[in-house]
Image (cartoon, rainbow, N blue to C red):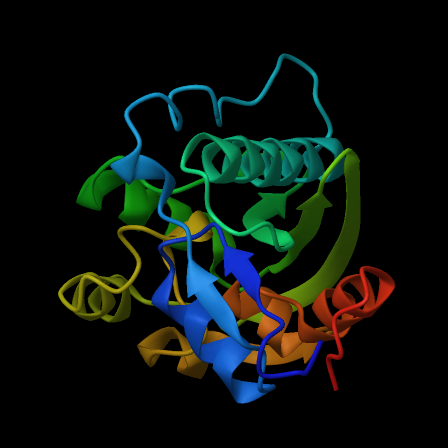
Length: 206
C-alpha cells in the first residue's frame, strides 16, 4: 500500500490538531463523533473522585479513540487507524478543564498567574482490537497577569473551549515565560508521541 493510499482517521474537531497533522504530512480524514447521535454521549469527560490527572487524561483519550473506532464500524467506512487526543491542565494536583463561562475562565487564569502548571496531552490509536496510548507532560511557567491583561485576553474568546482557559498558539503565548517539554503537546497533539504511535501501527509517519 502506498503512502498516499494509507491514512488515519482523526476523531477530533480541533483545528489545531488538524494543523499539526498537516504539518508533519500525515494523510488523515476527519471522523466527527458528534455527527453520530449514538456516540459522544458515551465519552463522559467528568473526572472521577480522586482520579489523578495523568490517569484521567489517558482514560478520556482512550474512550475517544474507542468511540471513534465503534463509529467507524457502524458507518461501514474503510478500516484505518483511529487517532484521538485529549489535553488537560493541572495545578497543584487539581484538573483545570474547559471553563464553563467567562468568569470561570478568569478564575483559572488568576490561578495560573505567576505559577508553574502542567499540561498533560494524551494520544491514542485504535485499530481492530488493539489500542495504545502515549502521554506527554509539559511544564509551563506563566508570568504574573494583571486583571487588565486577563480581561483583554478574555475578549479574544480564544480560551473558552480550551483546558486551562488558554491557547498557547494565540495571544496567550505571550503569557508563557518558560515551556519545558512539548510545545505541540501544549497545543493539543504531542507530535513526537503521535509519530511513535503511528509508526507502531505501521503508518509511514516521518
